[in-house]
Image (cartoon, rainbow, N blue to C red; front, side):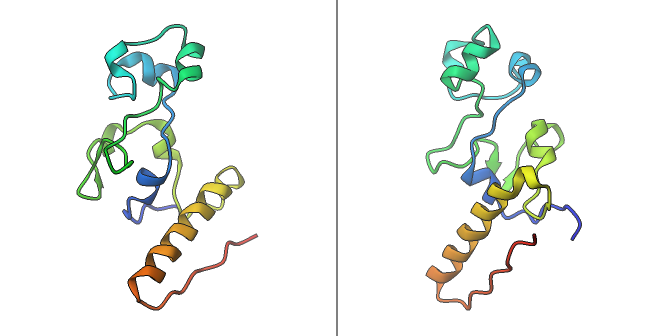
Length: 120
């Protein structure tokens, strides 16, 4: 399967988005503790979570609007690198969380549930 975004919004709702040092320092992204400004050094920002993208009240990414990324062209590197269809071992845990979340959502909807197993 090719890495592609299925635009389900799961990764934008289930995970915290870590900005890189460069992305955080740029000030282009709304972060969880933005009211405190850019915290230096970056290690301190990482230590308190100041480098994380802000979240909406429903815990989805602040840039997720109507199920779509509002900053798709300039989204953080981690968002560009991750696809829920990836076979990359470094993302295996995240892919499993998304798979389980989708299965639980389908089970609660009364629709037939067909969950594809992870490939080894």
